[in-house]
Image (cartoon, rainbow, N blue to C red; front, side):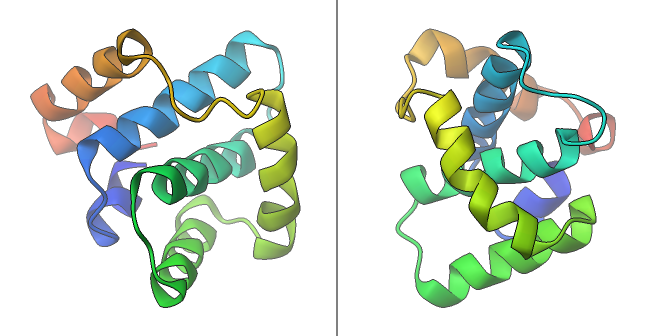
Length: 116
């Protein structure tokens, strides 16, 4: 996720939110080996949409980067966005105690240790 965040200039708090969404989905049992990259990409997309004021071209760039980095197709990504949103119970604004551990880990660790 960090490489995508650097290429698209995402804020650490946005990436931390994506990690928190992903963690919540893991704990709910929604992930498996086949869908983990796709779900991670959707989490980044949702976190970016909720925490940034993106233009259409910036969303396209982000989706292109997600396709490239996670080796997924936008044909799979876009439809799964709604399913992930439902699994997260439409709760994209998370409490601080769910996001901050991920945020502190992102800002304190060297870039090399956190690539997905």
